[in-house]
Length: 332
Image (cartoon, rainbow, N blue to C red; front, side):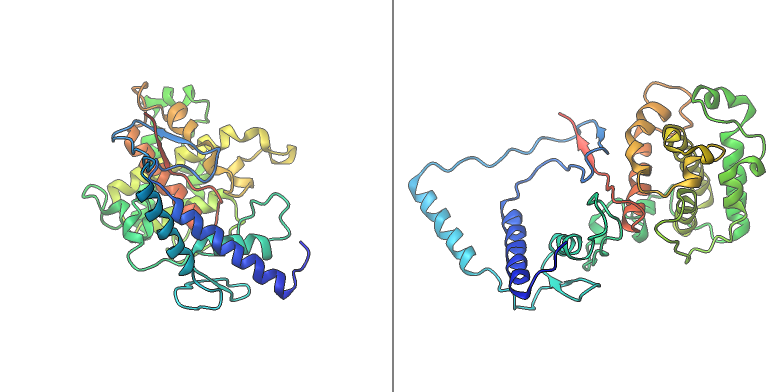
């Protein structure tokens, strides 16, 4: 990207902030959609559709609307005003009124080496007070795990390893081997044979450890499980380990064709990072788990599958392991 002189940068930032303000003013209620076009997660519609605003026909109403627009234009903030600019670029210390403005600035000014335009390493969102409580899928504030059957803690290494053993026994029970074979994934006889669960069991389970965003997906899953251990009781934590293990197995299966020849003896999540992991979320729920049509659905109903998938993928997005942010699309 060519360097901009000071005058051009000021013009760009003015236009950038104006575009974002105009966008915010024009927003109308709509069904939540996904930022990543490939990651649709469809669920049944449980609410009424929102109607779009009707057109105003009378001249008086048009006049009032024009007056209101003039007032808005006349009171738009100047670029030099610092009040309310709570979103600060950590690269150059420029401040903005909204996160979209900061993100656009970062992509255009500091992310010049990424030809695809989808680079990770986005500036961290500045969380305003009370914002976390509005998000039902943020595990960091324990909202998701606050339900009675989930909440608690699994604090010691012995407790975590005990949950890993129980999760393995439940998933790879000889009497339930048919459900594993039907899905085309490998059946393991011991935890030590399982490349993911064995790696997880030998981990130190440091809940404060944060990995590099380019680390392989297996290590991302382990970090997620370690951090979630402080939010859920051992029974539900065992269930969470089962879910992440199944999610991983499906990701390895559906992405196997992306591996190079020298990587074929390992799984996709052992070799690659988590950037594209959320892309197959719909297929995981509808085809792999398939809670609506299969009796051997591993004990996860549709609602729980969606919640857990959303929770895991949101956590990866918030921690810069992926650019894909999932959200629900409710069909008519």
